[in-house]
Amino acid sequence: MDMRFSIYRYNPETDAEPCMQDYQLSGITSGMMLLDALKRLKAQDETLAFRSSCGEGVCGSDGMNINGRNGLACITPLATLKQPVALRPLPGMPVIRDLIVDLDNFWRQYREVQPWLVREDPIPEVELRQSPQDRDRLDGLYECILCACCSASCPSYWWNPERFLGPAALLQASRFIEDSRDQATEARLDRLDDAYKVFRCHTIMNCADVCPKGLNPSQAIGNIRQRMLKQFV
Ligand code: SF4
Ligand code: FES
Image (cartoon, rainbow, N blue to C red):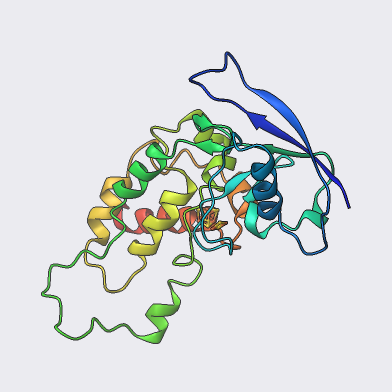
């Protein structure tokens, strides 16, 4: 089977402006994923630029806008896509080249929420134990692969990318706020108590709609707000 693609092309160093370039691919077989097609297109045109690594929905590196919806190319079956398949970089993020976006701000915000356990008590030599019930509280939070599909689908993040932390970083903040082994909950909530960092979320829910791992950052943000209310009221 043949398939048609329309792919965003832009090299800020050489192109005056972006354009959509048409491609055609033959020999598409059932079960092929979008990333397979992109790799074959790159074999035809080595100037086409995109990120990928694991090919299995684990590393989060091939997030892109696929027919108007953010997702991972490696787990998107070609059979589900209307033609021509329109591929664009994740919206609202600076383009480095073609489908590759600059994630520096995204990673800065990830670091800002301190995505590690903070302990005042000494770390036990063998293990830091947690009850099964406390461990269950992390379900729906720890599975995030930091693909940025959620943050790049959020209008509030498009308008305030520097000041609103965005769904991905806030889901990570919640993951450590909810962790019974962490001893910095109060300080974490204090740092998030800002008109923009959390409160620019307007519960639009695009984040939960696009997350390839089925997570719900919007709910995690709601949980942070509830924890803030309990702490500060
Ligand atoms: Fe990607 Fe989902 Fe994590 Fe957002 S919450 S970064 S969409 S895995
Ligand atoms: Fe790793 Fe798609 S290539 S998630």
